[in-house]
Length: 171
Image (tube, rainbow, N blue to C red):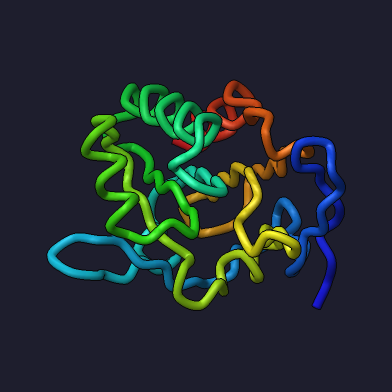
């Protein structure tokens, strides 16, 4: 298994495990889960056909993750149905649904809690914490990686403007 690199969490070095996903590469398939009439599955095939912003956070129940998700939710509203978006964390799907309801978040959420395969395939698992690191991935309508940012300090926010500019170029 390839190593994605080192990040910091509150200044402490942490190791990312999983494959190093390159811009231009075909995005690996995944099976994420979300709460809607029980537990449903979301796969890469469900997102193909439109450009997609994947907002990756350690936990929606933390301040920076909440701000990041609210910010992207607001930015994405202007694109209407021209793009897909999904926030991915390892929170349980029910907790994700509660957060979105309480915060009036329209973007879809999906959880990597069952198999952790998304984190491994995308190189976003923090080995020491078994959580996903903070990242933003933009896929084109064919499912190829058009943009990727892994935030080097997990407690920092991502570069919203670069991610949204990349997504806008694809719609």
